[in-house]
Length: 207
Image (cartoon, rainbow, N blue to C red):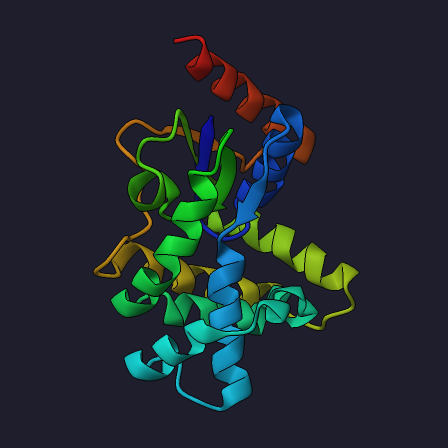
């Protein structure tokens, strides 16, 4: 069984995908980490994330980079959004994601184009959304907990900018698959969101 979990940054898709993977004993891939690694590699190389050639070169990042704590930073998240607009970058990372999705037994993947591009045949597709204000508040609390100095206004502005880039890029824009079920987590706790997601996946499995 392949479960696709898509949605914008800080919508709760990662938490939900992780819980679904644990519940169904399936491997889980946070595909956003791949793009964050590309963005981080661009930074480390001192090149331009908005240059297609520089961004493509960064897709050759070492696997060890996926364990870099800096991948979770807001700065790297912004770089990931910028490199992900380049079609060549998306193509370079496609096979790695596709191979994970189609492994024997299935998998859970979360990202922005899993249900539309990476695994359009997924048995269950969820599109997780939340208001910008709710997402900014979650990210703000997360950053505070990690001792990172940042303002709520700055996070909200960054999320809005990322949303605009992700939804308007020419290739694989952030959009719900036609057969995806949308779950709004704006007013839900993590536990309630996970329970709702499980119920939606079970409903799809019963069809």
